Image (tube, rainbow, N blue to C red; front, top):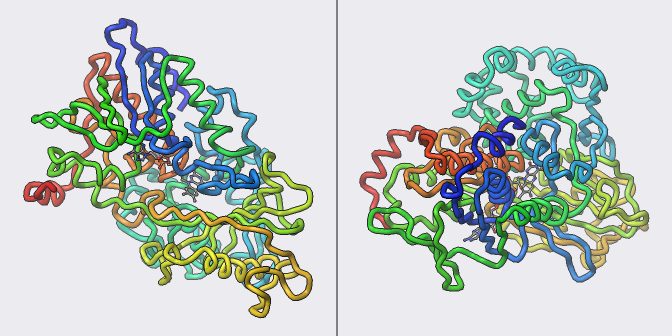
Length: 517
Ligand code: FAD
């Protein structure tokens, strides 16, 4: 990651002013910001056009009437995020990360209110620290179960990425059955892991996703160590990036939605049309929008090109992010917790874990509600339910996680949300629905993730869903933005384009008969 970052300031940097490019970047999420950052490093002039009045996309956040921050998602950073860590170092904001003790905390399914931990002993290198953490935990898996789990995972260590990539056609559940892993591993570990990684159940999630994550964690001693940002993402990460870009000649524009990509007869881009009617002409154009929006915005001339038709195979998964403020301090830990509840994924008491949200008297739980549509697992379309229904269901789950502090008693008035025995009272809540979040990493999707290089000469794709070795994540978005900047920077220097990733034959065949709309 570091070497690639340096290349923008050295080998990829323009020396002749005539090589400097005006680059229009559509979207001010992490990928668009990363692309702009590395383009100014290489001496170019990027402008970000962000549709909303806030930067960050899926990490955006805003304040409610009381001044409390509402986040699009509860976000966790991992030690195994090399490009994010490198960018934080370059922006000199490493101290904005609050690192937590190297541990994973799981709620015990049959024991309400009880938790079990996997502890990583400092000083023990990977992968031994991982192995030891699993061996030392006596509560989740028996010793024979641990022994049965190891052999199917060995090829990942020996063969590496080719083995991992080859498992993309299998769901986690299919992989487990194929390799004779005990069913209980699914209930004890994989359900929690799948919901945390992609907001979906293991029978829907590609095994490649789990193996990729495990491989990173097994290879890096601090790979699984987690950090929270010390405040809201727009101020604590997006703003320093935008300031960095603007100080070096780039621009970051809010409230600038792009309505159309307008093409010439030969399919090359003529200009971008903003919703305001303004026309934007640049030397190079980068889309850093989510895949679902790119699909809707494709110009007619591009619609029967196989490269763009493969995007039909990718689709954002719905997820819901909850904030719940209670009238007292709950017995919560300063860390992320895997809830292992059927409705919830991970959660944290942000009044404890995050400096800016600290409150000595009240707890604010931030929770990821998943899976929340049949596409992701389960059979209830939670994304279509009312906020009240979602909060009621969550209170039921919280009563299991905090049995002495939160009540799930149908008798209590739904409006006050207070238990009958003086349990914690829910003061207020906020429900953020993201109907299309990260692309659904269901089996077989990797081969459709497009390369950043596109068949249109001045058009490049960024965004977490594009082809890079990480899942849709902050690390994936940052790396994809960097790879897109690399494509533009290389082209500016007259270097050959990185080849377009191979496209599946059935996509090529279908594209030939596609009638553009
Ligand atoms: P986006 O963030 O979607 O950015 C796209 C941008 O394009 C947006 O700002 C959008 O407004 C803009 N845009 C769209 N259309 C237009 C237009 N027409 N004109 C101009 N602008 C436009 N990742 C982790 O690593 N760890 C986590 O713990 C984690 N938790 C998450 C929890 C939740 C609930 C969610 C939703 C996501 C989570 N993620 C997590 C994933 C992570 O947030 C995303 O992978 C990443 O932020 C995606 O960045 P992006 O730039 O690719 O896309």
